[in-house]
Length: 98
Image 1 (cartoon, rainbow, N blue to C red):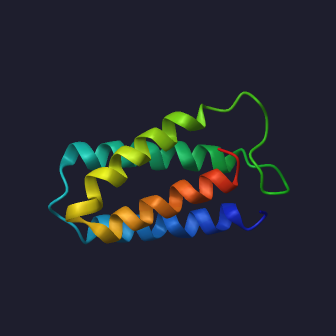
Image 2: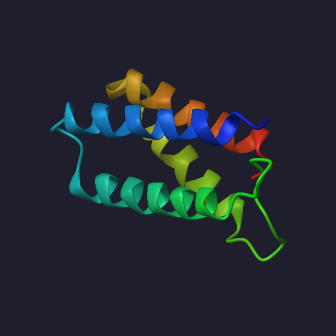
């Protein structure tokens, strides 16, 4: 599990690359994903020394996962690569207990 934060950072970088390569994604969807990515980076910044998320006062992970799930559903038909990357982020968050 200690590698999950690093894996998640790599997956987030792939998401950024794919978003740059997909100009047909709406501004609203881009803004939503940017907000989720910022939330995830904030959680990673609070990761403890063992790589886990520290403390019970975290922002609710469910809202992050719910927003990502919405994006994943939106991308399934039109951007399957993005949908896969978003699914990988959801899986990594789950392994981290978020």
